[in-house]
Length: 83
Image (cartoon, rainbow, N blue to C red; front, top):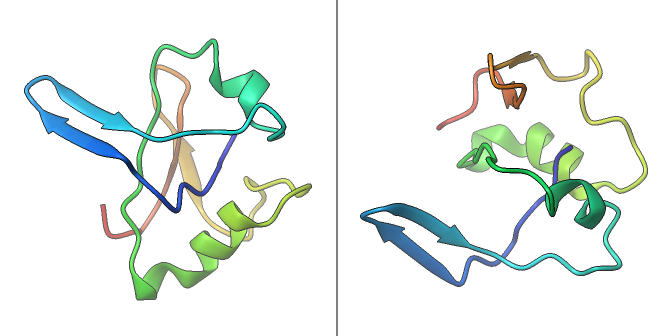
């Protein structure tokens, strides 16, 4: 599952925390709510194709259009993005 968070409301370092909101009407809400972890990608202008994938609803965001790998814990990680 991928979503684009265009607004982050709070960031903390000890412990690492990031607060963002997802509407219950979002197609990602039901998948995101029960998860214990998430992967964050910090994107810039060079990652425009990845940002388009994250912002487009109703598509498979993990096709071969963008290369990605899966962590041992199951989360998907896009390859070649800034961070």
